[in-house]
Image 1 (cartoon, one colour):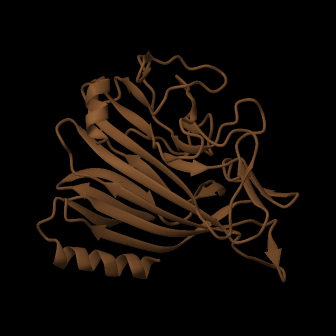
Image 2 (image 1 turned 90 degrees about the vertical axis):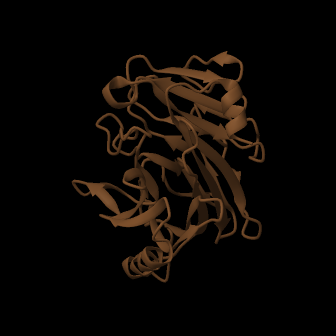
Length: 304
Protein backbone atom coordinates (compact mmCIF):
# COMPACT_ATOMS: atom_id res chain seq x y z
CA UNK A 1 0.00 0.00 0.00
CA UNK A 2 2.72 2.51 0.90
CA UNK A 3 4.55 1.69 -2.33
CA UNK A 4 1.40 2.20 -4.38
CA UNK A 5 0.63 5.53 -2.76
CA UNK A 6 4.22 6.65 -3.34
CA UNK A 7 3.95 5.91 -7.06
CA UNK A 8 0.69 7.81 -7.36
CA UNK A 9 2.12 10.76 -5.43
CA UNK A 10 5.08 11.08 -7.80
CA UNK A 11 2.78 10.94 -10.82
CA UNK A 12 0.76 13.80 -9.43
CA UNK A 13 3.77 15.93 -8.62
CA UNK A 14 5.03 15.78 -12.21
CA UNK A 15 1.73 15.42 -14.02
CA UNK A 16 -0.39 18.02 -12.25
CA UNK A 17 2.01 20.57 -10.86
CA UNK A 18 -0.46 23.41 -11.43
CA UNK A 19 -3.60 21.62 -10.23
CA UNK A 20 -5.64 23.18 -7.45
CA UNK A 21 -6.84 19.96 -5.80
CA UNK A 22 -3.91 17.62 -5.20
CA UNK A 23 -2.83 14.76 -2.97
CA UNK A 24 -0.09 14.45 -0.40
CA UNK A 25 1.10 11.50 1.61
CA UNK A 26 0.03 11.74 5.24
CA UNK A 27 0.64 9.73 8.38
CA UNK A 28 -1.48 6.61 7.91
CA UNK A 29 -3.24 7.79 4.78
CA UNK A 30 -3.51 10.38 2.04
CA UNK A 31 -4.33 14.06 2.33
CA UNK A 32 -6.34 16.04 -0.21
CA UNK A 33 -5.39 19.71 -0.34
CA UNK A 34 -6.77 22.72 -2.19
CA UNK A 35 -3.75 24.90 -2.81
CA UNK A 36 -2.43 25.48 0.73
CA UNK A 37 -5.68 24.45 2.44
CA UNK A 38 -6.43 20.99 3.78
CA UNK A 39 -9.65 19.37 2.55
CA UNK A 40 -9.74 15.84 4.00
CA UNK A 41 -7.59 12.90 5.02
CA UNK A 42 -8.48 9.37 4.01
CA UNK A 43 -7.19 6.75 6.45
CA UNK A 44 -5.62 3.81 4.61
CA UNK A 45 -3.64 2.21 7.44
CA UNK A 46 -5.10 0.63 10.60
CA UNK A 47 -5.38 3.10 13.47
CA UNK A 48 -6.26 2.36 17.10
CA UNK A 49 -6.47 3.99 20.52
CA UNK A 50 -4.46 2.16 23.17
CA UNK A 51 -4.68 -0.92 20.98
CA UNK A 52 -8.50 -0.83 20.84
CA UNK A 53 -11.10 0.06 18.18
CA UNK A 54 -8.66 -0.48 15.33
CA UNK A 55 -10.04 0.89 12.06
CA UNK A 56 -9.19 2.26 8.61
CA UNK A 57 -11.14 3.16 5.44
CA UNK A 58 -12.70 6.40 6.67
CA UNK A 59 -12.23 10.17 6.48
CA UNK A 60 -10.77 12.19 9.33
CA UNK A 61 -10.09 15.02 9.54
CA UNK A 62 -12.64 16.69 7.31
CA UNK A 63 -11.90 20.40 7.22
CA UNK A 64 -14.31 23.25 6.67
CA UNK A 65 -13.59 25.87 4.04
CA UNK A 66 -12.27 28.19 6.76
CA UNK A 67 -9.76 25.59 7.98
CA UNK A 68 -11.73 24.35 10.99
CA UNK A 69 -11.64 20.59 11.65
CA UNK A 70 -15.26 19.42 11.50
CA UNK A 71 -15.02 15.72 12.35
CA UNK A 72 -14.04 13.76 15.45
CA UNK A 73 -12.17 10.46 15.85
CA UNK A 74 -12.16 8.23 18.96
CA UNK A 75 -14.56 10.54 20.86
CA UNK A 76 -14.74 9.68 24.56
CA UNK A 77 -18.48 8.99 24.51
CA UNK A 78 -18.37 6.63 21.50
CA UNK A 79 -14.73 5.72 20.74
CA UNK A 80 -15.80 3.51 17.81
CA UNK A 81 -17.12 6.57 15.93
CA UNK A 82 -14.74 7.77 13.25
CA UNK A 83 -15.11 10.90 11.11
CA UNK A 84 -17.01 10.16 7.91
CA UNK A 85 -17.58 6.40 7.81
CA UNK A 86 -19.94 3.66 6.64
CA UNK A 87 -20.45 0.61 8.82
CA UNK A 88 -23.12 -1.83 9.99
CA UNK A 89 -23.90 -3.47 13.31
CA UNK A 90 -24.86 -6.84 11.87
CA UNK A 91 -22.94 -9.10 9.51
CA UNK A 92 -24.34 -12.58 8.98
CA UNK A 93 -23.23 -15.50 6.84
CA UNK A 94 -26.13 -17.91 6.90
CA UNK A 95 -27.24 -18.16 10.53
CA UNK A 96 -23.85 -17.15 11.94
CA UNK A 97 -23.23 -13.55 13.06
CA UNK A 98 -19.55 -12.94 12.38
CA UNK A 99 -18.90 -9.38 13.50
CA UNK A 100 -19.99 -5.85 14.33
CA UNK A 101 -18.23 -3.39 11.99
CA UNK A 102 -20.03 -0.45 13.62
CA UNK A 103 -18.38 -1.05 16.99
CA UNK A 104 -15.26 -2.52 15.33
CA UNK A 105 -15.73 -5.91 17.01
CA UNK A 106 -14.53 -9.05 15.20
CA UNK A 107 -13.98 -6.84 12.18
CA UNK A 108 -11.06 -5.62 10.16
CA UNK A 109 -10.57 -4.04 6.76
CA UNK A 110 -7.63 -4.16 4.36
CA UNK A 111 -7.26 -1.36 1.83
CA UNK A 112 -5.77 -3.57 -0.87
CA UNK A 113 -5.85 -1.05 -3.73
CA UNK A 114 -6.03 2.73 -3.98
CA UNK A 115 -6.00 5.11 -6.93
CA UNK A 116 -5.97 8.90 -7.07
CA UNK A 117 -7.35 10.42 -10.26
CA UNK A 118 -7.62 13.97 -11.59
CA UNK A 119 -10.79 14.73 -13.57
CA UNK A 120 -11.14 17.18 -16.46
CA UNK A 121 -13.65 19.30 -14.48
CA UNK A 122 -11.06 19.97 -11.77
CA UNK A 123 -12.40 17.40 -9.31
CA UNK A 124 -10.31 14.54 -7.92
CA UNK A 125 -11.22 10.97 -7.06
CA UNK A 126 -10.04 8.44 -4.51
CA UNK A 127 -10.85 4.92 -5.70
CA UNK A 128 -10.46 2.05 -3.25
CA UNK A 129 -10.74 -1.71 -3.06
CA UNK A 130 -11.23 -2.93 0.51
CA UNK A 131 -11.56 -6.46 1.91
CA UNK A 132 -13.69 -7.15 4.98
CA UNK A 133 -12.48 -9.88 7.36
CA UNK A 134 -13.38 -11.36 10.75
CA UNK A 135 -11.78 -13.59 13.35
CA UNK A 136 -15.04 -15.53 13.19
CA UNK A 137 -14.71 -16.36 9.49
CA UNK A 138 -11.79 -18.59 8.62
CA UNK A 139 -10.97 -21.27 6.09
CA UNK A 140 -8.23 -23.80 6.75
CA UNK A 141 -7.54 -21.88 9.95
CA UNK A 142 -6.92 -18.54 8.18
CA UNK A 143 -9.03 -15.40 7.97
CA UNK A 144 -10.34 -14.88 4.45
CA UNK A 145 -12.27 -11.93 2.99
CA UNK A 146 -16.03 -12.39 3.03
CA UNK A 147 -16.94 -9.10 1.31
CA UNK A 148 -15.20 -6.82 -1.17
CA UNK A 149 -15.92 -3.10 -1.15
CA UNK A 150 -15.17 -0.72 -3.99
CA UNK A 151 -15.62 2.96 -3.25
CA UNK A 152 -15.21 6.20 -5.18
CA UNK A 153 -14.85 9.46 -3.27
CA UNK A 154 -15.08 12.48 -5.56
CA UNK A 155 -13.96 15.85 -4.21
CA UNK A 156 -15.01 18.94 -6.16
CA UNK A 157 -13.44 22.38 -6.26
CA UNK A 158 -14.94 25.04 -4.02
CA UNK A 159 -17.86 26.84 -5.62
CA UNK A 160 -18.90 30.01 -3.82
CA UNK A 161 -19.27 29.16 -0.13
CA UNK A 162 -19.40 25.36 -0.43
CA UNK A 163 -17.59 22.23 -1.53
CA UNK A 164 -19.30 19.05 -2.71
CA UNK A 165 -17.99 15.54 -1.96
CA UNK A 166 -19.64 12.48 -3.52
CA UNK A 167 -19.47 8.90 -2.24
CA UNK A 168 -20.26 5.75 -4.20
CA UNK A 169 -19.92 2.54 -2.17
CA UNK A 170 -20.24 -0.88 -3.85
CA UNK A 171 -20.49 -4.00 -1.70
CA UNK A 172 -20.05 -7.46 -3.22
CA UNK A 173 -20.37 -10.60 -1.10
CA UNK A 174 -17.64 -13.21 -1.44
CA UNK A 175 -19.73 -15.77 0.46
CA UNK A 176 -23.27 -16.96 -0.19
CA UNK A 177 -25.87 -16.03 2.40
CA UNK A 178 -24.19 -12.78 3.47
CA UNK A 179 -26.43 -10.15 5.09
CA UNK A 180 -25.80 -6.77 6.71
CA UNK A 181 -28.04 -4.76 9.01
CA UNK A 182 -28.32 -1.97 11.54
CA UNK A 183 -28.69 -2.07 15.30
CA UNK A 184 -31.20 -4.73 16.27
CA UNK A 185 -33.32 -2.33 18.35
CA UNK A 186 -36.01 0.04 17.10
CA UNK A 187 -33.40 2.69 16.21
CA UNK A 188 -31.82 0.54 13.51
CA UNK A 189 -28.81 2.84 13.12
CA UNK A 190 -25.93 2.04 10.77
CA UNK A 191 -24.74 2.88 7.27
CA UNK A 192 -23.33 6.20 6.08
CA UNK A 193 -22.45 8.41 9.05
CA UNK A 194 -20.71 11.64 9.99
CA UNK A 195 -19.26 12.18 13.45
CA UNK A 196 -19.05 15.98 13.81
CA UNK A 197 -18.11 18.34 16.57
CA UNK A 198 -21.47 19.79 17.64
CA UNK A 199 -21.79 23.33 19.03
CA UNK A 200 -24.60 24.21 21.42
CA UNK A 201 -26.53 26.05 18.71
CA UNK A 202 -26.64 23.10 16.29
CA UNK A 203 -29.83 22.79 14.22
CA UNK A 204 -31.10 20.36 11.60
CA UNK A 205 -33.08 21.29 8.50
CA UNK A 206 -34.61 19.33 5.65
CA UNK A 207 -36.57 20.28 2.52
CA UNK A 208 -39.64 21.05 4.64
CA UNK A 209 -37.94 23.03 7.39
CA UNK A 210 -36.46 22.23 10.78
CA UNK A 211 -36.04 18.58 11.76
CA UNK A 212 -36.01 17.71 15.46
CA UNK A 213 -33.81 14.78 16.54
CA UNK A 214 -35.68 11.97 18.31
CA UNK A 215 -34.56 8.78 19.97
CA UNK A 216 -35.60 6.75 16.93
CA UNK A 217 -35.38 7.49 13.21
CA UNK A 218 -36.86 10.65 11.73
CA UNK A 219 -37.85 11.57 8.18
CA UNK A 220 -36.29 14.21 5.95
CA UNK A 221 -36.65 13.37 2.28
CA UNK A 222 -33.34 13.66 0.45
CA UNK A 223 -31.05 15.52 2.81
CA UNK A 224 -30.34 16.88 6.28
CA UNK A 225 -28.62 20.24 6.68
CA UNK A 226 -26.63 20.33 9.95
CA UNK A 227 -25.81 23.92 10.79
CA UNK A 228 -24.55 26.10 13.60
CA UNK A 229 -21.36 27.68 14.94
CA UNK A 230 -19.05 24.97 13.59
CA UNK A 231 -16.47 27.29 12.01
CA UNK A 232 -13.43 29.14 13.27
CA UNK A 233 -14.34 31.20 16.36
CA UNK A 234 -17.80 29.57 16.23
CA UNK A 235 -18.64 31.21 12.92
CA UNK A 236 -21.70 29.97 11.06
CA UNK A 237 -21.40 27.00 8.73
CA UNK A 238 -22.61 23.48 8.20
CA UNK A 239 -22.58 20.10 6.53
CA UNK A 240 -25.42 18.81 4.35
CA UNK A 241 -25.70 15.01 4.19
CA UNK A 242 -27.46 13.93 0.99
CA UNK A 243 -29.30 10.65 0.39
CA UNK A 244 -29.15 9.83 -3.35
CA UNK A 245 -32.44 9.08 -5.11
CA UNK A 246 -30.93 5.84 -6.49
CA UNK A 247 -30.36 4.40 -3.02
CA UNK A 248 -32.39 1.40 -1.83
CA UNK A 249 -35.47 2.37 0.19
CA UNK A 250 -35.12 6.01 -0.86
CA UNK A 251 -35.84 8.22 0.98
CA UNK A 252 -33.87 6.66 3.80
CA UNK A 253 -34.60 7.63 7.39
CA UNK A 254 -32.15 9.44 9.69
CA UNK A 255 -30.77 9.02 13.18
CA UNK A 256 -29.84 12.53 14.33
CA UNK A 257 -28.24 13.69 17.57
CA UNK A 258 -27.70 17.22 18.94
CA UNK A 259 -24.74 16.15 21.07
CA UNK A 260 -22.30 13.31 21.76
CA UNK A 261 -23.04 11.21 18.68
CA UNK A 262 -22.97 10.77 14.91
CA UNK A 263 -25.47 11.76 12.21
CA UNK A 264 -26.62 8.74 10.25
CA UNK A 265 -28.55 7.87 7.10
CA UNK A 266 -30.02 4.78 8.77
CA UNK A 267 -30.15 2.00 6.19
CA UNK A 268 -31.35 -0.75 6.09
CA UNK A 269 -32.69 -0.56 9.66
CA UNK A 270 -32.82 -3.34 12.24
CA UNK A 271 -33.62 -6.12 9.76
CA UNK A 272 -30.57 -7.36 7.86
CA UNK A 273 -30.63 -7.47 4.05
CA UNK A 274 -28.81 -9.76 1.66
CA UNK A 275 -25.70 -8.81 -0.30
CA UNK A 276 -25.28 -10.55 -3.65
CA UNK A 277 -22.19 -12.40 -4.86
CA UNK A 278 -23.06 -11.33 -8.43
CA UNK A 279 -24.51 -7.80 -8.46
CA UNK A 280 -22.94 -5.28 -6.07
CA UNK A 281 -25.11 -3.41 -3.60
CA UNK A 282 -24.63 0.27 -4.50
CA UNK A 283 -25.03 3.13 -2.02
CA UNK A 284 -24.55 6.79 -2.94
CA UNK A 285 -24.31 9.84 -0.69
CA UNK A 286 -22.96 13.38 -0.88
CA UNK A 287 -21.70 16.01 1.52
CA UNK A 288 -21.94 19.75 1.04
CA UNK A 289 -19.43 21.43 3.35
CA UNK A 290 -20.10 25.15 3.61
CA UNK A 291 -19.44 28.39 5.46
CA UNK A 292 -22.16 30.91 6.17
CA UNK A 293 -25.63 29.74 5.14
CA UNK A 294 -27.17 27.22 2.70
CA UNK A 295 -30.91 27.33 2.11
CA UNK A 296 -33.04 24.72 0.32
CA UNK A 297 -32.87 26.47 -3.04
CA UNK A 298 -29.08 26.65 -2.98
CA UNK A 299 -28.76 23.02 -1.82
CA UNK A 300 -30.88 21.80 -4.73
CA UNK A 301 -28.85 23.91 -7.17
CA UNK A 302 -25.58 22.52 -5.77
CA UNK A 303 -26.77 18.95 -6.30
CA UNK A 304 -27.63 19.36 -10.00
